Amino acid sequence: MDRVGTKTEIFGDIVGNRPSLRLLENALSSGVSHAYLFHGPPGVGKHSVAYRFGAALVSRGDEGAMSRALRGLHPDLVEVVPEGKFTTIGQVRELMKLAASRPFEGARRVFVLQADTLNVQAANALLKTLEEPEGGNVFVLIAASREGVLPTILSRAQEVRFDPVPPDEVASFLVERGCSEGEAKTAAALGRGSIGLSLRYAEEEELKGLREAVLRAGLSSDASFEERHEVVEEIMARAESVGEAREKAHLLVEDSDEGPDRRRKETAKRLGRAARDEAVAEALGLLALLCRDAAVVAAGAAELTANVDRVSEIRARVEEKPGADWAGAARLFGEARGELAYNVSPEAILEVALSRMGQKISGRSPR
Image (cartoon, rainbow, N blue to C red; front, side):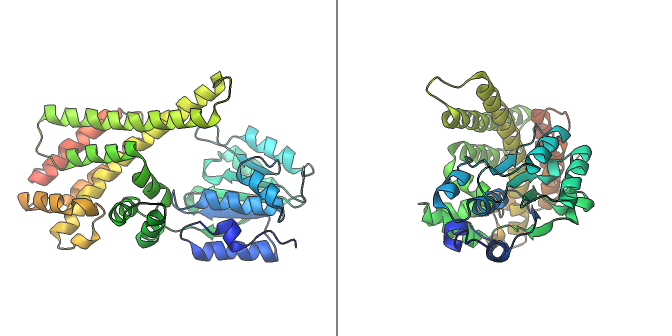
């Protein structure tokens, strides 16, 4: 087999999951399977590793080809991006046609796709290709968990598990990028094992602003209806700013001398809306995390808090409410986050969840 690169060249700057990376390094040197399933929580490096792995396979040690592949410019490294929430049977059929043809440059093609976005028809269509692979095609499937993938596809792919990255490793990475030790420690804790989310907390002002709005809401659970409405409006405004920043970032990257065309603008708007919705979900996650921190402080385990820079404020709040059910409040926000999947106003979800949090903390049973 051709030498396709060294550890430093391919996976050297990937943080965490060394056992999985070693498995893939060994595959590059000794022989690859026709299909892999990379599974693990969001933000732990699955997509980055999949792209590096695919780039190494199609470039065959050629630095120029490797560079083009990593920039998305190699014709034999193909990523199938879901159309909305799902990868459709039409997309899989196009993939199958491409897989049946000769590679443009090298000995193989590599296809990267989100396995847990395949609808049933698309998954069944892909299954036939996985059962009878042609040539040197390699499929890298990505999923948040094994449970989201059809068992028939699982049985035909080599599993590579990606775990949450330990906070110490994330913090060291952030310090190398120029963060202070305190900022790095906080961002690493807030990322909850996700290197991607930790990086955003370290560098994105919009996400930092969202967190501040959430902390104000969570640490003032005695607020009146009017005050609660105001903090919800602030959280939603911060979520909108996250979405707007994502939309602008896409236009800056995709812009040309003639300016962004209609399709690019539509894509940017779609990405912006998705980022806004993710920010609302993150706000509820942060509220759950804050209540969880209060619970561990109340239990005398302040060293386990994620909001490591706000422990004194959390402790003061806990002391004000000695009989509060902080763990119960955390569960309420976890449940509220699940409600975002339904066609319910996120503002209403936030207001109701904050109201129920106040009841939990005051010792009154939520209705």
